[in-house]
Image (cartoon, rainbow, N blue to C red; front, side, top):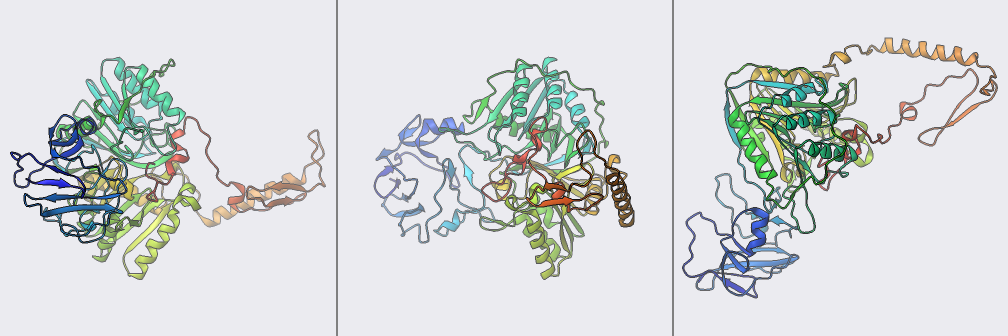
Length: 603
């Protein structure tokens, strides 16, 4: 006699149906469509599809606002859910309506820290930071005792050699899940593996910020031509994309080793020129962890899913042969280490994951982030709040964010303003917390990392940006490893970034002494003055007495007469502009595009 009602129609459960204590019943209007979107079977349908039919009417729920009521056999309202512009108040719901949801979104009741459902008959029972979508996974926080070898990789210092070497070790299988893939060199290694009989599968995001560029189209077609199974995760008119962005960056080899990192498979993250993004990667030899990550890949890649589509056309232009590279070698020998696998959005905010890592800091906390969003939907960014809490316990907290031009220009979300506000709050609270910008220098073009080191004993390597969308809507992957030696290496790299010291031998010679720099400027200026005095009318028509007039990039006039040298502000001499498109497509403007949450939801 129990029924569901929208206040107009009622659909009753069959009299012989039951649900166990703490059990679950799934009711849908269209069981067939639900099964196609989720690969799961509904228990009941109140309209159509392959499921047991409810008895009575058909509920027609309005997107803009409505209510759904659960009634017992006496027609008494036991519970309710109310959203949008519905005006219902009464048994089961006494507060404001919950927010109306977007297409494919799901309302999920929140749980208390004890695990019990929260039920206060209002919107606050349902409105957490995460936005759930139809068909999303429910992977919990993975905890592992590692016993195998591992290797740490620092970008751009290491270039693409370690990744090429790692992928080349495959004998049976390779799985790659990455936001963008524009490196022909990496693709060539995968193509070679496929041609020698390795089963290679690649999953890419079908709607990255700024769209799919020509480099990625060429790479995906070349991979398909080589026999690689390439699929795109994408949405459409009748397709709900499970995650706003497939933003993970990992590769699995032979179900025994995993590469997890912060960088996409492009020349910014893994350059052959040793010039690109600051990023971290970690390679782990552990079959248990790799199989767990493999289950995530299978769930995301599954050809039965409506939001994964195959690469249909193959390129007539074959990928070139794989470039020469060093053979893969492991960095650290086997020993026992504790690890936690973060699968976002499922466990991005798990209290025993990243938040626990931050909460356990006792001495020092080092954070590198592409950007930091201070405020999220329901309040402060919980990662940032945890960093301030650590400072409140006396922990020395350092936060380093990207200072490249695209992250500090007016329409970028302005990391410089965020840094200033964080430092102001720390100063006002007399807290040992400081934030800085890592500006381009040497081989580093931008800070793209998303890593944390705690007390020199544990490290997070991940794809997860410090933004609302990244933590609550994107597919992200990260790993926390407790190992003082490993954490120490990443902390040493952080220290160098914090202090402006090079981590690459290519950056070893840098002129930083102010007096030496002043002397160099005087030398160059004097040489330029001598050269200008020697100008004479020649074949190119240079007139010695004419004043040179040039329009500056900002619209100002730059004038110089004969024998005249002026030192101009740097922004007038070299004002940055959009990069040309081409092989370095992964370095393009779309890496910094800001999403609806205020941050660059992709890269």
